[in-house]
Image (cartoon, rainbow, N blue to C red; front, side):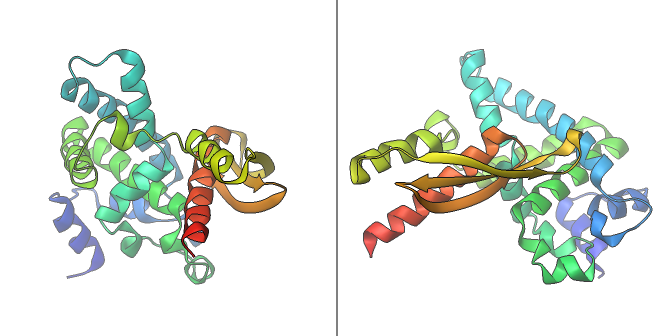
Length: 227
């Protein structure tokens, strides 16, 4: 069984148009005529709707503000990376040799992007139903308990509370740079505690980068506390 067949079996769906699934799995580093960036763009919009509908039905008595926060906690790079890992999509990515050596199969941004692209491809073939089926099952599997406390984590606030308690200071965030075209920029953020750089991370928005680097810093500082 080749990798494409293996992935389709895992999805529970056989693509009629095999060029779609190949495009969804092809990273731009391959320098092919078509890569997964356009499907990623489409999948991002589709998943925003699918996850929004999922939460709307799951929490019938929850107000719009809380639903928006929960959706934001699921519809982001970290959230899609988790769903991607459940399908082991890193295994099926088509990468250049250089990106392979650069551990591309483990990069959160690539794992998130390929999930979005694959769902975009599924949407083009089947409409929303299959995307809803797969994404809903993966969310339920990835988040055994779904509520505000378990999926909405404001890491910036948690980090600030931690550093104030343990170090008597608040974190300082610095933008280290940005890359990519205007419609698809990535932002590199670093966090400093008492002048010392603790962690740096990349996100698809400044807000996302803040949250990702704050989460990383929390893990590092908590590990240091245990040593």
